Image (cartoon, rainbow, N blue to C red):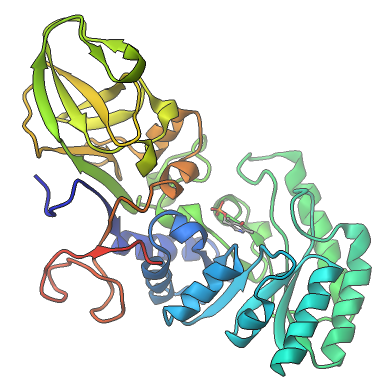
Length: 404
Ligand SMILES: *Cc1c(COP(=O)(O)O)cnc(C)c1O
């Protein structure tokens, strides 16, 4: 049985998140820290994670969409906020008015933010992004001189202030990949050209989690880790979280909804892709692909039930999956641990990633809104991060909506 009257829950250890921020800051002592909290804090809850990261020394928050940035401000979260994924017609003016640093990768976006700044009668904070080789967003190097010159002109006119120049790696998680040095060189050139254009950005930044952990030459003025802050190794082929001083923040558990004896030869779940090999006990775990349990892990996803790892028997369904306990005993209400830090013998998000043929980023970010987030070791009562740490509040476990 669990501490809560819910079918399943994702326990979010904010103390682990803070210590991960400290461990990452120690790897980049000369750089400011931008905590990347996009995608609802990689599924951990954007607002509580943002607050915990700021408490641990982050001074910037990074999000993809302007809506995420505005949601941080609407929740009263301070600190500098950078967002980077814009489309024409986006809430430029709202972001300028909410003191959000906005990223510009092209002339149309510069024109939009200049118009928004004029409409708001404010100076917009703008960061310029170069495509150093990822081939995703960012200005091409050929467009960079024009973009930086136009940005400088807008600065002189008082519409904007260029606060940053940045880029994003393509293959920083592959140690020694030839693109790394190439992209570093493109970025250094872009930084120099921005200075030549007369721009004086506060921060120049490039490093994601793998860059923060393995490429000191990529740290510049600020590092931008995401997944590592949540205690997941960004380079699993080099080492697990503990090898980098990190601890997984999310533990996903569910209470068994059914335990029953069945005879041999019994089909299990849709399509009968599992047939009981003999008389056995089946346990029903009440989470499924609608909760983010990957259907690709049918037949292979690991779960700790009744003291042992079991694999999902047959297909993961929308709301539930089955495990075969063999001769072992369990009761309805017993806890099934899908993943956690791993130190109580449970699988990790990385184990699920391997089972599903994906990366641990996808496992945690897809845990759905139907699974309540339960915050433990919250930094302080009354700051919006609910918690059940014994020293705080009345000790009542509280369920958050995931922070948004
Ligand atoms: C998601 C993201 C990050 C963080 O990446 P991690 O690999 O999770 O550290 C940093 N910068 C940008 C632009 C991103 O989109």
